[in-house]
Image (tube, rainbow, N blue to C red; front, side, top):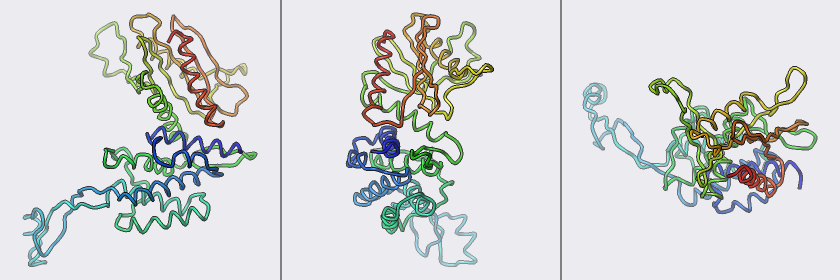
Length: 352
């Protein structure tokens, strides 16, 4: 197995966790396939996922419509009907709800299928499979991918199967592309690492939520431990963790970091972790440990880069354990999973 197929397959595993789709039918079979390009993987997820959705039936919803009709349907818009009667006698403007498939979720799917066909690095066979899906979306409006409002797309029992599909669509629109360098595949962005960073954070949180629910994994807000009046707290920045684990009165705060360069170089050529990262995790930990008991630990978990020197810190600062480690995303999933479990071992050794 090549390094490129391992790295790209891990992206799928990360997405499966991040979008809570790890129990979906076909997950194991898809994870076992080899993909030379990231867009091939994303296209295959959409081919299988949208195909399965078509068989189940596309998600439909009641959408508000306003139309000029010969008969009455729903509620008549009297003001607009009277204003237009002189030009269109015998017609009325009606407002009504139509139960149809032209929903924001399906519009996003269709726009990204077309985007992949036009600009994706997808092999011909998968492009043909993508084209065969489009007739099933004929009644859905084609919109510009940049017009999709990802934050407005909500999920419930009736459309839960769209969560992974639209997570994939969002990554595609944000511009994740593969490049080749000395035979290995890397993930780069047309604009920034923001999309991959967000995926990395969600993946970590959902991995622990799935495998260790007893630790109550969540992204929690840390309150400022103020000595004086608290009425000015609103002017302080919010402290929201990427992952917080809790067990038997002890807490681990994990701050996920996805950077092209995980270390900074000082004036004398010394490599250190980013000072801002250390200050941030220490601030979270000290404000969470209001009793000053040392029951709160903090870990900076970096996605490993190709730099010669990687973050590796394990210290106690004013009674609290603070660490910095790396997670190698370019290795077989079994080893990656072991690293995630080793994080819990580090916490236990710190008294977790």
